[in-house]
Image 1 (cartoon, rainbow, N blue to C red):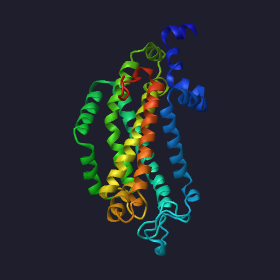
Image 2 (image 1 turned 90 degrees about the vertical axis):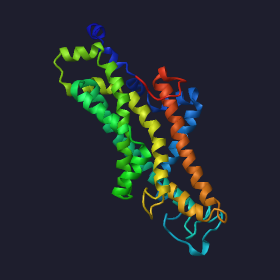
Image 3 (image 1 turned 45 degrees about the vertical axis):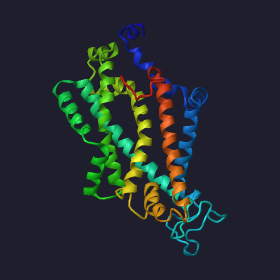
Image 4 (image 1 turned 90 degrees about the horizontal axis):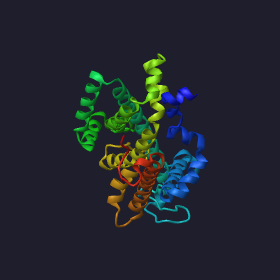
Length: 308
């Protein structure tokens, strides 16, 4: 054990990710409540939205596409707590199912983006050489294109669908591989990496057992901060008509077609989707900021993303 500490192998065991895993979710939430109350509020908002998305069929009193023509454009009432749209569909039910659309697309896109950016960032940072140059120059070219313009261009070719939106939003996150590459460049010089090489560990084993656990903190931080952005971008695409197609409810499309047409006669069609979207993005953003400060104290109060 003393020899391991001398070689630096013990550094991996004390990584913030492993400390978080040992402390448990409940302990971490207590710490979040005490040290970052705004982040705790964001966690509560996120939890509510995730529960709405997961249990939408049981929470929503009606189906998202169930019309009640005799109650079209009806204001909030005991039967329709947030009113109805021009087809008499319950707005609350559509908002609940809209949470499922937004959360599923965001989680899928962030998961895909995390896998791609993590693979490129970790491998290019560790392997270096020509592979690193090729990957980073490709990432530089990818970053030179404005994200929204790229999204609109690809979606105009592929067509609107939940799967296409998820894939496109996930590909945009490749640019974040540079952040992970910077973290790997600092980690690969540590003694425990050299000790693993001396012990004839394969490159794959070193990457999975030694490098990956030590970059899990920036990965978590980037993913949590990206979720709010992805939800907002998905809503923007839906607002422009390139998002999830009808009849599936999307907060962005609800703000576009229905709200603008009946803005004066039925203002609740714009108010409630705007509130749900704003709260969700706010929740993910403040939660991501709190996770950044708690998991990486070096970034406390800087207002920026993770840097190596």
